[in-house]
Image 1 (cartoon, rainbow, N blue to C red):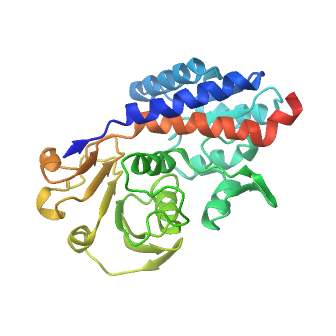
Image 2: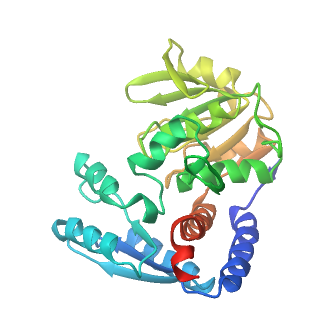
Length: 298
């Protein structure tokens, strides 16, 4: 069994981004809004700012009161000197967060969580602007990070139309930010995807969800790849007896969703995704700048 470190893979992307930013000859400005005093969130926000600044992207981290966040987003949308907006969710832990996410101008939406990008994802539309194949669409950062990690370890085939054709995947998380987009992306790429949340399972094929009756045990026993993102200690950890030898296992939750001995039973175990998510946020920032802001700086 080999444990694959996302920090090592992420650094390759970071170096490429640093080179591209250096060649632009103009400044990219990003603002990050954080509306919580939660210490892990604060630490993550500061680490993100440091990484952005290290590659030459100016990152302004702003602490705001949550009731002032709506106005702050609108002001950032209107600021022509700002090229990207990042928000540290959750803020309200309710539908209000979805409203705030969709308030961000899609041309500045680093996380690609607004309806503009979500519609393109679900339609498998891979271009930022219709009819312009030179401008690629954005994908949400954490799902993209997972796919890039799977590419780095050889699970995703490169330079083919459906790089994961015929694989069966089980994902525990169906949030609108991470789990559902990931299921859509992987099914667009050829996989059959069982998606579990507290409301039960769905099967995604070619980006379309279908009602299905299957248990956790049955899905795990069939799967080639198992991906977990359940942010609760109450989640029953996945053990060696539930998966086949050689199953690829990926955890993107802040809590470990696999038993500690899972590494004995797997060929590839990726216990965290964080560094790759930050790298994909920088990648999205650069793509936004090239797609929508570069011409005004020429």
